[in-house]
Length: 112
Length: 114
Image 1: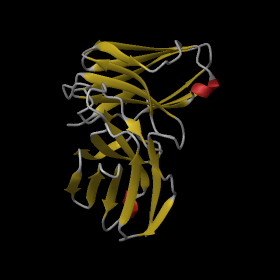
Image 2: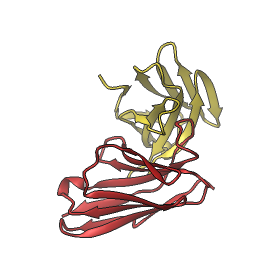
Image 3: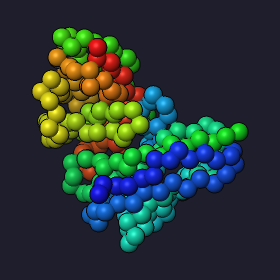
Image 4: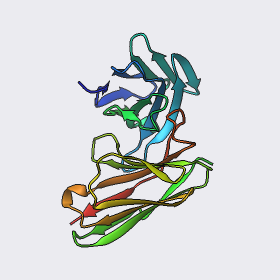
């Protein structure tokens, strides 16, 4: 079993839809959770960073962490064609010298 | 400015060539990373430098040789690579490499080994 599970999709939605992307994990020591967006043939771009449980909102993006369920989510409101990309969840624990554990990535396509 | 730059953007090399990938950041970060990413896969960690010292080597073959000349620069020296080493090579940096900080990625170098 992988430490982090993420449905690879692809996920296709119409423009304006609410998108929900999710990851589950098995290591209860993870405390730091990130979402990256990666366009084709580009490097990953940090979208959201959350410490421990709770919600964090930034514009159209909301990140949620539920440590009791070992489950994290990224919500995208009013999705746009420019949101079409691969979304990677990543997480780590304190003192891990920066080693991120990535999910497999979910490919999202937002159709105009 | 959260920018990590990488050169070259693309590289084609033969199996007997020696080449180097370069990475630079001016965010004052003291941890820098090399990742390898194959198509439709997440990045795989190769090396971590923390305060210019190698702190993680993820059992990478010796044909990959990292170097951190100073706190802003990171190189990856390539020698006698195999076709299966063709991939996107990503550099990243973070404040101190304790795991608490966010990592910022560069655009990557797309490497093709013939």
